[in-house]
Image 1: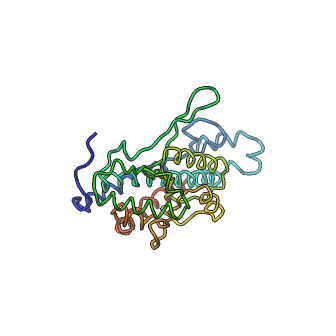
Image 2: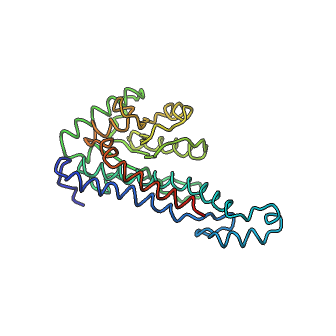
Image 3: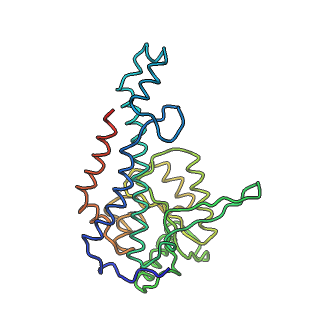
Length: 276
């Protein structure tokens, strides 16, 4: 596939903003139709009428009033919030890959990374991270120079042996990271090990500042580079500084310009979820 021929300043800001906004908004908008399953299985969830029929038919739930529409609304809001955080993360992931493509001249295949994990059964499982920058894919000399300098600074920060000769970075993109799920953490640590095996620097890219301090400590010890959503800081600590100074795109400025319509999108979804 032929990479984009344009450079970052060749874009019309309005056109690009609209395209980037849609990547975020389309992901978040899916949450508006969320319906709780309430232990009944199936992917579609239950409507209010189905919920009331189910709970009213249960003598105990009916006796104590759990067949109330307020209970349904509470379940919908609780599950819907989990869905919102997940879909915001998906929107951010898509946005980040698009930014890498547009500003570093990469193809859709070049910004993705996956690897095969052998299983005890003799089969294998395909795993992936959310983004990739490989020095060998960069065709612009200025971009190569910026990335090489950044790799040197990141390697020094994480005390990585220069002899490892990293060839790029792979990114796990999230809106924030406050979950203490050990299964998720172990999977991330396994991903980091495999990234280094392929000579890639594993980077946790957070658009918010929301991450538990114990997670920062554990991931840093496993030599993840953590970029958080601070507006100021070095390219090895701030996601927005990294985007501006290394990728050559001001993501913080985009967020500021489009804050009103992003807020409106999220508020619309929240209003839908809080309505039984």
